[in-house]
Length: 559
Image 1 (cartoon, helix red, strand yellow):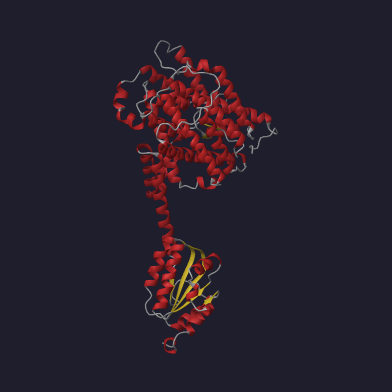
Image 2 (cartoon, rainbow, N blue to C red):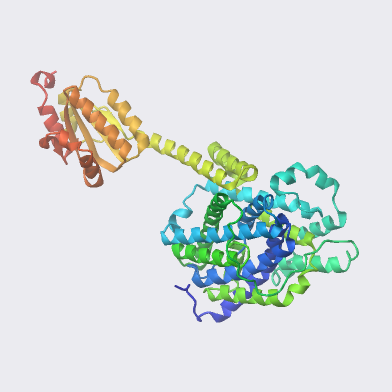
């Protein structure tokens, strides 16, 4: 049941957990405030972000399948959760009601993740074209940047991405110079951290401390907005709230959030494997992530997933078992309980700078710079998914992206496989045949046709089978060679059946060669082999060609 927790690496795990906790603090505050601002209840958001980092980190470490994985509210999960909050905020009777419904979505997302793990779908979750993954992750990064523009300029959020874009001129005109300056300083510290301090203090924590100190000294009296005060007590258990009349929307949003959490966590698990030379348990990790999100939602905290930055820092600091994640959660819990009163002095502009930098980092700049050089189709899919993610929604973007990418891939694979569907009537064709087989084809003088298929015959090859068969003209016998077919799909099998039936109907002799294993099983289920005399079904191509030539009238053989 539990993750691989042991005491064989106590010192490394403690250092790893402490370091990951230091990084998690400013991120949790930034993501919590972003969600709170979206709902109109920023004081709830700060606590939700911090307790999300504690609960998700603890539960996922205890029950997950990746020992070194650090789980917490992440940028992608926060973006999707924020959009959920915004959708409910417009209809709910109060900000607290909107958050309660959103936390219920978090619980449902966790249940989806548990089901994915129980049904052992872990290895399929990340089997998605990289163009789509890059597109929707970059789109999420852009959304996070857009959502932070208002607080970065010193103003209140304006209602999601479209609200920000439509009111951008107004936001720029109403900029508060001192808040903008503090946000820019924060961003500069994150972008160009002092090399000497970077070794001892994570840039995120340095930016948080420096920004807060500046607000209390150099910027004192500038009227900077700060985090609203929130309670430092343990969160209370809240039952899921389905009273908003939007159950369908809640389930759809939960499925999207759960799938995103699975992708986020498993991709981070792969990174952890590469750094520690270990192998994680995908299905167990999904169950652990699901339990973590269920617990977090029930206690009114943000959903989360595996965090790449926290995981890498944990491993680099010496963490090797799940004890590091437990240590991190305990340290964060103490910070929340003991230092919450001081959090109200942290400027919102500093947190906006931190969150905006996270959004910039999420964008897949490396691939975006090269996509159009690699392939025009790859570039179109990637940028199309980005636009759909930002302007429509994530599920539409991923659905359309995967569909288009798969159609293009199938088209390409079908074109390649179609080249391996050949009709051979003479020895002049570029096909490897033995001297005996070549002699038999020469003897038949074009009256015997060798119809050769090779490799996986997917449904896209069916057209090639029909095309090659339709090109048959004056032959008297057809030998269907399936000895090199590794897979025969249903559609290709039906096309093959039609070719055999038409050959029989026009009076041609039909021979079947090399149908074995799953290929033979499929043909027998179609009852295709029942249409042929038993002597016309053989495992040997030379024997089939000999029988085909022998079935010709003597005049045809001597022509």
